[in-house]
Length: 227
Image (cartoon, rainbow, N blue to C red; front, top):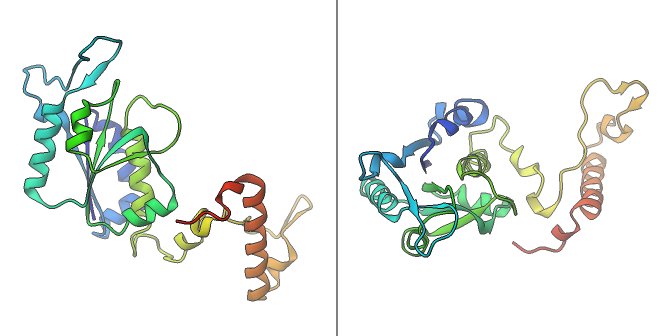
């Protein structure tokens, strides 16, 4: 998989992709993330990518021309499955969406700034809009990193234990159950006996019941949801 992230601040994204699971994915040749500087496609001598909004109002708007030139240049190099715009009013990122995107080949992620992008970008160039929550960030870079992480970790071979992702929270619309490690007792706080029993079926059943209970208490809206 290749993910090309279009941004006016590539330096904000350099660190997340140099460490941990995302770095491992790159080192294994399973995923490549490229940071594309939108200013390289700006036509003014000051490399401006934004301008005042028609009709007035506070805040700047990202211009359609450099974005169009950038996306067209990328598409001339390879085919992309989706051109994703990180937007507060986009489709909410959840595990089923991450699962679907992890099966794609190549993705473009566009990071917005200011008051957003010229609406013509959304109408003619973007194929999907994604939000990571009902709040506003200073730019789309952090959201793009979150989306990329959620996708890449699901690619087979990225995690050392490929079954790990299958037991994450929100797979099967359940929150993950409690987990414990050594020591079995600390300050009188004990690990549940069933986890020390070695009885695989009892452990599996306990984990399912705990996941179901937590979901009912914390995220009841997940129960019964069809994806």
